[in-house]
Length: 210
Image (cartoon, rainbow, N blue to C red; front, side):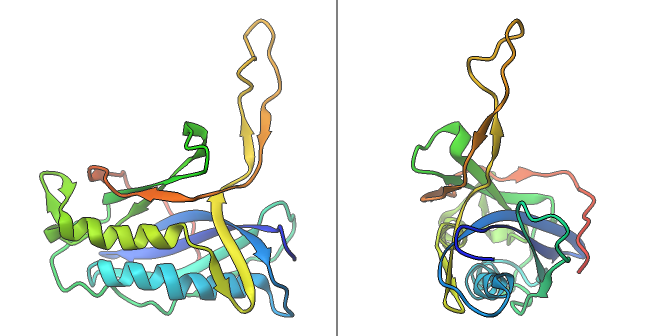
């Protein structure tokens, strides 16, 4: 485990007793140490993103754990670190887990291929105005968005967030002349936007173990 290793992070939470999860991707860009980098990444995320979400969400939102796996490394043991962020700090009535604010994340190109989404559950009802975030809500969710594009510095290591590597369709491919999909590289997020109407997500079965 070293510089340029890429990690998939699943942040498991509970909202009104229902489990929800966000999946993110981080790349180690600096530092080396004797401990498992996944420990440093989880600790750094808990101190940054976890704290920001705690500050802006209702008390029925609870941070549970961070599950982290290195991408492209078969046979690795399951890794989980319990969160110390606890429950949300806003003493207010909240929406159910299916009502979310969406944070859009953008790479340097700003193209559709470079856009990510992060769904925030546990919103106070007071943040809503005509299905949009009001000024208070925009400020609170904006602070969460700021953490999503920040580098995580922890234990002497640095990790940057971004779009996961994968594949995309070759634009020159046609039914008559099919071409292989093109590989895409890890691409860092540089910009976030929270000015998106609230939406509802259907309940999904969670496989999280914490």
